[in-house]
Structure formats: C-alpha cells, structure tokens
Figure 1: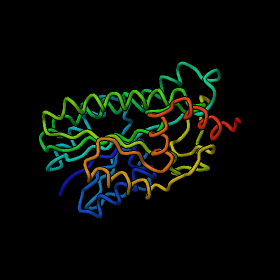
Figure 2: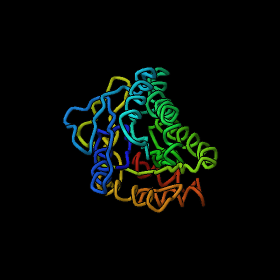
Figure 3: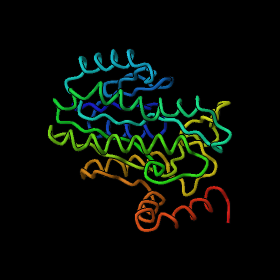
Figure 4: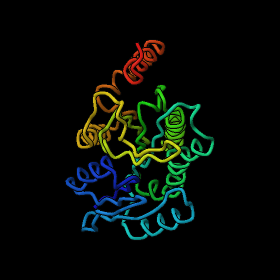
Length: 253
C-alpha cells in the first residue's frame, strides 16, 4: 500500500485529497496542528504536529518513515492567509505567514527527501493563484506563495536526477472555511475563509482536479476556472490581470 503524507491534513482540501487517495488504495498520514475529528483507521494515520517546530517535525518524519513501508508522495498543503492592507500589518505577522507557508514546507521537504527518493515518489506543492500573480490585500500571502513556487520549481530540476517528479498545484478560491476565518489580531486567517473571493470551488472539486493532474504527471496544475484564466492572462498581459483582479476582489472600477 502506497503512503501519502499530507500537511494541513485536517483542513477541507487535505481531507478531500485523503478521501480520494484512500479510495484508490493509498494510506494517508494527515499532519495538522489540530487533528480533532480525525480517526486512525487502516488507511489513515493522524499526526498532531506544529510544522514550525523543526525538531518535532524531524522526529515525526522519522517515526512515519519507520512505520510505513514507503513514502510515495508528500503533499505540502498546510498554510494560512493574511487579509488586509500592508500598511495595517506588522513585520512579525509577515514573518509568521512565511514560517507556516514557506519555511515549514521547506523543512518538511528536507525531512522526507531521502524516503521520497528511495520510493521514487512525488513532491506535490499546493500553492495558489497568488503564487504566480499578485493578489489584493494579501501581500504576505502572495509573497510566501511566490517563494513556495520558486523553491519547488527549483527543487524539480534537482530531484529529476533521482526520478522524483515535483509538481505544483495552484488553486484559486476553495471554500474550505467560509464563515470560520478565526481571524487573529494580526490579520492571519484560516485558508479558504476569504469572503471577497470569486468563483469558489468545493474542496472535493479541487481535490479531483489536483489528483487528476498528478496522475497525468503535470508539472503545473491550475485548479479551477479562475486559476486557468489568471495563468493565461498573466502570461499575455500582466497589466490586464492587475486591472481585473482589483476590480473583482477590491471592488474598484
């Protein structure tokens, strides 16, 4: 039985991807800071873990690698957003977004680099439209996702020599936590809780597109109509994209 390790495993998209993989015969290790509601089964292992604590992460990765016959895919899905004007945010909150969205993913990739190579498995980074395009009132989030895409796109060229594909999925707005932002004083919110998004997808719809792209071996997987259009417009006319984005999200124009 193949094993997938999914960070952010207790979020809507993490659970939806796990459900699809388990239905296909995979065992899923679901990592999250809070695993309440996740039950251990023959095909599922919840792991409570704060990914920003590197020593704890490395210890957990060692246990998972020891307990499973192989690590065949790591899905980097953990993340937070921060919504609000840059002028109203702090340096500390900006760094916090990077710690979770970027540095935790890098640490997770380092922890599972050897077992993924041994299995000739797959790295799958869950980025965002904000990973290749600007996004209004989300400076820290967009910057962290740009960094994430830069890291995994560069890792792709290194791991290709080991027979390891490194894929990037870029969802648009996935309705995982609408109405439950759990907004902190620093503006950091749960992913998928934005109320100013457009053309929302369900987690199940997004998971289907993402894993279909993985099955086809696509290096880059735009997820949803907004993501596909945004990717195309950014390639052809960044200025037009910026205009449409401001009009759609900020309500200007």
